[in-house]
Structures are given as structure tokens and as C-alpha cells.
Length: 271
Ligand SMILES: NC(=O)c1ccc[n+]([C@@H]2O[C@H](COP(=O)([O-])OP(=O)(O)OC[C@H]3O[C@@H](n4cnc5c(N)ncnc54)[C@H](O)[C@@H]3O)[C@@H](O)[C@H]2O)c1
Image (cartoon, rainbow, N blue to C red):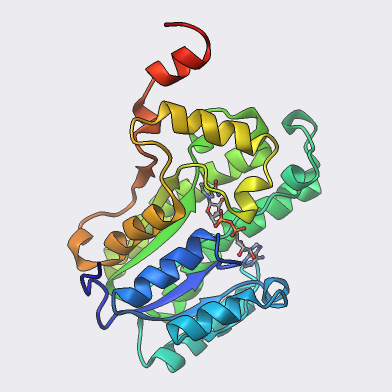
């Protein structure tokens, strides 16, 4: 059911790789809710071609941009305003990549070139995006920016390796930039801390399947799906959440505040 929550709003949605991507679901929902937007991803992801289907379905233009490049982000924000016919109302940062995770390197033996690459792609890209938008004055007052994160920023999950530290940085950028952009332009910046979700980035993590089941057994409501996450992002882009900024918002079916559940106790043979 659609509520026209984003009627007349213009957006930029990063990170839709395939139909499992959280960003893909956000784009579908944003379209249903009346928004117009530009889709963007790293040029290498474009070559896989999937994003074109989403662009056709949602009537969107695709503007490739490597989120680590200030020049490409400048082109993205400039072109997006031209294509959409005005300033931007919402931005989704849905970008994450760790070479250390991809290569199964244990946290204590992290390769530092890979670590720095992970920081650049998954956290600094958020700062760069915000800095470019602010410099160009590309976001409308009361505009809303959301980045996706994971609870390993607060609690240790050994298999999440360097991404735990990188997500902590991402969340900190939302607070720090949220202050400055809020004071100057009333732009809101939040992170959404999502349940484990079966996507390319998610399933690339060692032991993801078991962990997914564990989280599902802990959370009173079960794991939140990508579609649920998209619905939540839509509310954050809407005018109904105008005073929410600089927050890390857990979207995880209650997982983050549950110590243990009966379901997990039973799995361990403890009644
Ligand atoms: N899947 C999960 O379990 C989970 C849980 C919590 C948070 N998240 C976060 O959600 C976000 C989206 O991930 P997803 O799970 O939908 O997976 P996904 O693999 O579908 O999306 C990750 C996206 O990042 C893009 N990307 C990588 N390098 C880039 C670059 N240099 N420039 C621009 N884009 C680049 C990829 O092309 C891809 O589209 C990530 O930040 C991820 O950490 C995922």
C-alpha cells in the first residue's frame, strides 16, 4: 500500500546492484511513494547490467559514480539536479565493501591497504558525498540523508572484521556532519542499523547463514527484511520524521536490545 509519502520529492539512490540489494527495494518503494530519483553505482557494477531493469521499472536515469571520487560525486550531484529539475530532497548511501572480508583475512591480521580501501569505499565516501552536496548546496532544507550500517559498530562480531571499525566511523560521520549540515541548512543525517540481510554484500561474510539464523532466533520479531528496511528508509525521507537527525536507528526486530531468547536457549538444549 502506498501513501504518497514522497510525492514531489527528488532523490539519489546509491548501491542497487541486483534485486536482493537493500537499495533496490528502497528504489521500488520510493517510486511507489511518488518520488523521482537518480540511480547510481560504481561503473564496474553498471557493467553487470541489472540496474538498467530497475531504471526502466522506476523511470529513473542512471548516473555512474565511484563513491570514492570527489570529482565523480560532483558530477553526480550536478547532473542529478539537472535531470530531476531541482535540488535533492533525499539521498541513500547503501555502499559497503571490505577486501579483508572478501579475502577471508582474520581481523588481527588485517591487510592495511585493504583496510584503507574499505574505509574509503564504505565510510569516507559518505563524508565525501555530504561535503560535495553541501558545497554545491544541492540538498533542499529539511532534506534527509540515510546511510546503512550494522550493529558490529557497537558490539563485537568476530567475522565482521574491519567493517566493524568502518561502520563505527560511518555512524560517527552521520553525527558530526549532521551537526554542521543541520545548523546551516536543516539537512537531516541518520544511519539505519539493519538486521543481517541476504544480499551480495551480506552473504559475502563468512558464516553469514548461521549468523542470520542466530539473529533471527534472538530477535522477538525475527530479522527485518530488505523490504522492511526500505519502508523504514522511506519514513526517514518523508516529512513525518522532520526532527530526527544525527541518530543511529536500529531496524532489527528488537535484536539489539534482547539479551537472550527462549528460542536460542532451546537450540542450546537449555529449557
Ligand atoms: N546485507 C546485510 O546483512 C547488511 C546488514 C546491515 C547493513 N548493510 C549495509 O547495507 C548497505 C548495502 O548493502 P547490501 O547488503 O544491499 O549489499 P549489495 O552488495 O547489494 O550493495 C552494496 C553496494 O555497494 C556498491 N559499491 C561498492 N563499491 C562502491 C564504490 N566504490 N562506489 C559506489 N558504489 C559502490 C556495490 O556496487 C553494491 O551495489 C551496505 O552499506 C551494507 O554494509 C547490509
